[in-house]
Amino acid sequence: MDARLGFSTVDAAVHHPQPEPVVRLRGFTRRFGANTIIEGLDLDIAPGEFIALLGRSGSGKTTLLRTLAGLDEVRGQDVDVPASRAVVFQDARLLPWKPVWKNVALGLKGDVRERAETALREVGLGHRITAWPLTLSGGEAQRVALARALVREPKLLLLDEPFAALDALTRYRMHELVLSLWHRHKPAVLIVTHDVEEAIALADRVLVLDKGRIVAEERITARRGERAGLSGRLREKLLSHLGGDDHGDGVVPFGPIAEAAE
Amino acid sequence: MAALAIDDAAKGKGIAPLPGRSFSLSRFGGRWLSPVLLLLLWEAGSRSGLIPERTLAAPSAVIGTLIDMLISGELPSNLLVSFARVTAGLVLGVTLGLVTGLIAGLSSTGELAIDPLMQIKRTIPALALTPLFIVWFGIGETPKVALIAFATIFPVYLNLYSGIRGVDPRLLDAAKSFGLSRWEQIWHVVLPATLPSLLVGLRYALSISILVLVVAEQINASAGLGYLINNARDFMRTDIIVVCLMVYAILGLGADWLVRIIEARALIWRPSIVEQ
Ligand SMILES: Nc1ncnc2c1ncn2[C@@H]1O[C@H](COP(=O)(O)OP(=O)(O)O)[C@@H](O)[C@H]1O
Ligand SMILES: [Mg+2]
Image 1 (cartoon, chains in turn yellow, brown):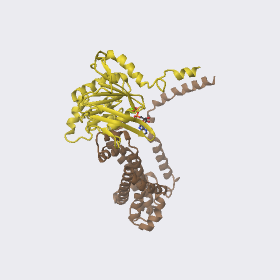
Image 2: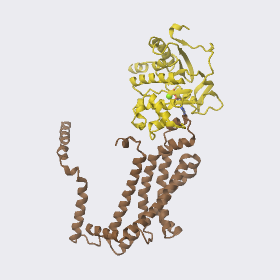
Image 3: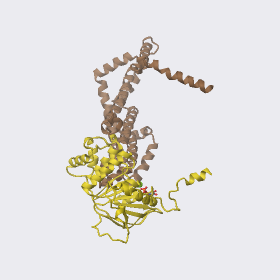
């Protein structure tokens, strides 16, 4: 483990003395009929830790996130998640018949308008408090979804490819927003993404999920904003894991096309 | 060469509508032109004796009769009777449609119990039940109200039920992830999502109710628009018949207007309405 690298491969044998984790999964398995989507997965998330979960489409990222969000039954499995958690989905999933602030306040009790307005101002939408969701742009809708998650002061914030549908500039702004909100509120964050750059820019720890298992785990020690240098090598490493095994159904650019041309 | 010729023809057509646009009548009074012309022809036909009064009264006679019937109170009092019938039938039918639609939509046991019955009921045209209802309920108000109620249950039921089943599961997931209870999910997500579809059902129910009213009122009525029409038929008063037809039309328009008002208020969040 070379500290100058700015990142390090996590060795399962090395024990990190850490505070009580907010999320703890042991041997978690999820099946749909005969298909095993996730198998024997162990996962700890420390309080305030920022984790990025990478994986190809269909690798089970959303399935894992739904479990952490408590949306799926976990009959008799060893799954510990905090009671206070919130989710931001890829599509903002705002209720179109409620004005923005009521969406943010959904399910809260007490003086909710005040809290909703504060949260909306935090994500820079203080001027759209009474707007109808269907009049928002994609980026604005996603910021409302962030406000709706944060207003609950969650211990665990789950983000499922939240910025995949946004243009590059908006996505970059959203990264800064998420980081500043994370600094202020310090929830543990798990962001699902298929964008290696996004994972490197945001996370303390990057996990790669493939065929229901975590096949790689990288801890990034370099400060955010000083990661441009390490990005190249780490990116190659993560991409190679994302490509799957070398002879399997991994990335074989132009393979089939070359065949077809013969 | 043929392609070229077609091309030229298309170009010619593309230019043609422009001078038409400057003809202002087609934009403003245009839609009223043909109905007014028809009325004038009708009036002329009646005056010249081409259309005998027994076949159809002249428009001017119809208007005179309308004013007379309004002043004498004959029309308002009978309209009120018909209005009360259709309202009672609608309240009953819509309520039953709401209750059954909610039960079948929200619970699978309820669906199992109710939906087959509703599908059977759908195959029976409501008006075909008229003789049976007369046997059961006699010839008073009850069979008329019952027919209207029976006919209006289904559109409300079907639209509510399919609306509930069609709620976006992703929105429900989001609500669940924020810890909303089952009842909170129904209140905040399911019911508002169903509203557009329910209003469509309501609009159907209203227009069906007026259709059934017209037929049900032919059952030996002693008051109401149907009674007026039956009486007028016996005395060959085509002017009164036309007045009553106009009132039925106005009832239908009023019902449509009512649902539009409800829609504009309840569905204000929809962009097409927001933009206005
Ligand atoms: N409710 C479900 N029923 C059956 N199969 C499912 C269900 N949800 C997900 N899957 C399957 O699980 C696999 C992983 O899906 P998902 O977790 O959504 O992948 P990812 O988010 O990584 O793209 C896919 O092959 C998908 O078809
Ligand atoms: Mg997914």
